[in-house]
Image (cartoon, rainbow, N blue to C red; front, side):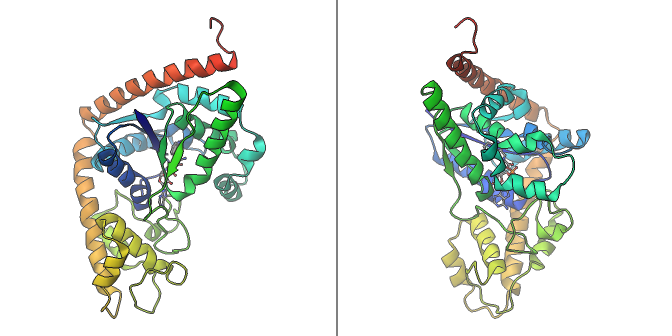
Length: 334
Ligand code: TYM
């Protein structure tokens, strides 16, 4: 049986980028891959690499759990859990810190970007974050890790650490493969389509769509997305990044190939009706997710799903951890 692992950090509300680049892929793979066990979690330990409000963090962990299910993850097929409820994650994270070199951590572009934005009080864990992420993956012997483009470098490092550990201590970890979607691995900002759509883009809420946004707000954000002035609906990331991003969103949500969408709108002389159609498509899609989310968020069912997920994940993680410790010589009796 193969394994698939992925997670999302509860540092803000989920964006359309998280949905298209990650959650929608999990749902698709869950239906496509039969011989694969899924471990999908909420990466709450990763959230505290930057300061978090206690109540808000708690709320966001639960929100993401409810959203996972509302977006279509089936708890019968997928083990859904909260990372901090399986303490082998930080334990193996420490082992990974003891496998990685500081230089490797310092080279991570996400760390460099974040460090630039914040000058004081940078937490040590922001630097060592990729070691914990490697642990999240290697703990379950994941074969496949679906992520958006911004996580690919972390995944490469995970592979390096797995190989290094294996060569130092003997075959222990499966070296995982990344999986990024062909369409939608990097959904861009609606206001600056050269940048990633990001939940941390706090100053420009029009730049991102949140899965919890008001439905009319979602439509307005798409209507006012920045596009060029040549009015041709054509995919051309370099010269037409705005319209290319909207075509990507259209294709990812409807599963319609970009070529077919271009064909459908080839006689248009402005972007207005294309944007209006997309606004309705995205709004309707998110509305269905929100309806299901509302049923789940305060339910006992959600706690049962997470309790069960943590139990199953712990079972696998404990066995793996025992093996890792004994490989290193950290088990007194074995
Ligand atoms: P996070 O929480 O920043 O993002 C969660 C997932 O969403 C993807 N994503 C996007 N995809 C397309 N377009 C965008 N604009 C966009 N923004 C975000 C991310 O690539 C990611 O797949 N370190 C991870 C969480 C993590 C993890 C793991 C992932 C922790 N441990 C182990 C996989 C395996 C993170 O911060 O993702």
